[in-house]
Length: 439
Image (cartoon, rainbow, N blue to C red; front, side, top):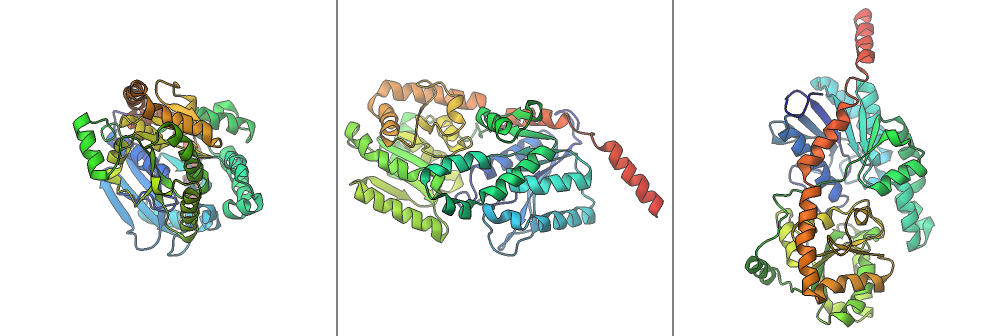
């Protein structure tokens, strides 16, 4: 692959689950931080001169191709039927994905220098595609089954969790993907440690590259504009905001449990929850969380927001007095990085990788989300002390912008790709010779 100031490289990115699109419908099932990650990284690759195909699943009424720019497109491959398939069940259909993609690639004579897959389902398919096309495969896990299983155990009923998340199948297939791919890009130090300790990956098989943000989109705003936003969105400066899917691991119930403790310190505190619920199971969870808030006496202090349009996301981050990331399990926490970049004081979970890299009390705050009292104390501090709030606002935004800009992430990722380009060129030439003999 050429250096980043040349034009010739071609990259295949695979992300099979969720609603992947040029303008993704964030908040829909399985459509969140990973989709943003893949698309933003692909856009930076294309800016740097690379031809990029983001390959995903075609279902419902989605078009076959989204053209994002002259170098970048989303290609959709039909498999698994016409309806949505949750990511936990995706591997039932991955053989069809591989077959259908390779047929399409051969028909259109598509050629790539490297495969970069995202999440284990795409990794399983990406490894087989890479082997068939005789090109290297670099995998980005985003989350790890072993880690998620351990953290989800805290919520109890592991038999039910196994039925929902199918941990055994996932972990077995993850191991094979990690062992067979050419390299793994982890997004946190915690992931690196788990890949080595639990999956037996050697250190030289791993690279650590944190995810990024759109530093031109997520920015602080002047005080007068901030007050105007709050008036329009019906936020108060003592509101705590979070956004995420209605998944058990997101810790929405823990945040609700923390609110009565916050209000003992900041009596006017409220929650503003943008929680996406698009299926009966998620809607049932939201109903139970509303009942929990009512039982705790804070039902009127929890505001349930409807779907947040992507172009409004930054304004909602800005409007909150504090942003909360209360997840039981979170590979990194991109929403927290985006909120910090907007100048909003942020409290993150100790169950994710982000707390490892922030300076507590300077860039942000963190606490154990499984201890509502502890999490509540950290949420209350910026609301109670203006000097701390200002420090977190300024330093958090600086930290986020300087460390997580997407162009820098893309260049670091390309350097990983470059280590493996051409690894299978001789093998591919041998295949061509066999093809010539057979004609």
